[in-house]
Image (tube, rainbow, N blue to C red):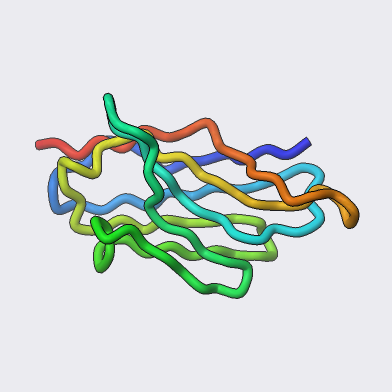
Length: 121
């Protein structure tokens, strides 16, 4: 069994910063990519940023230059540093990990429970 636990969400004023963390635990053999998605009310879930096991990153155009994704492989943890936050960044942020739970197991996607980020004055 695998769990992804997020932390770090909250209320912040426009222009402020937040740092999200997500730790994966349980039966983990290897983790390929880890990433962050978000879903605003009435909208579809969208990709925010992804980081591979080798450290390559991808960002949505809307967050480039403001958000930074990083990971600590030894701790199976991924982070999202969010700077210069805007009201349109308000959403529930979900952590994702593509991982294998055993040496012969297929790769599957796992999700965290989500953490609310609200940007408002």
